[in-house]
Length: 154
Image 1: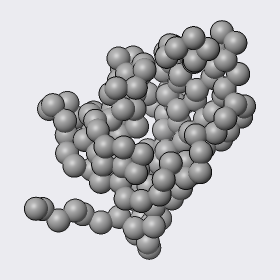
Image 2 (image 1 turned 45 degrees about the horizontal axis):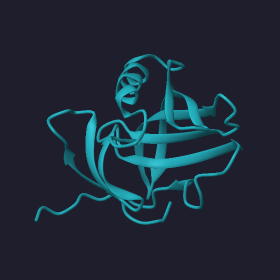
Image 3 (image 1 turned 120 degrees about the vertical axis):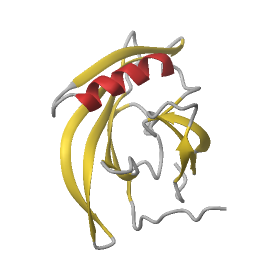
């Protein structure tokens, strides 16, 4: 993923879990700022996120994503609980969410991408990719915010 700013533009379509964002890897609407609405599995991603986020630490919600032949996965969203993360000298209470993606039906891909999101704003402050097998999402998947600032109104 290219480096750069992640801009939260607002809530899309009146659905609080659907964030309109401008990101280095593309602009659009993302469930919980993570799962783009036009990605395969989007219909199952939102309910899985809702279950994981609403549950206690350790809650796991899974679903199957079928993109194309050879590209099938068991996707799981895991609630890792809350943690304090310091960015630019300021402490943020974060929700740690992990997305585990494990290939099925001959697909050998397996990774866990963990995000720490500010509880008050939902802004992602840190992302870590644990590549277990298959090809990585690429450089820039693991990162930490250097600064958080409000966008000025136009």
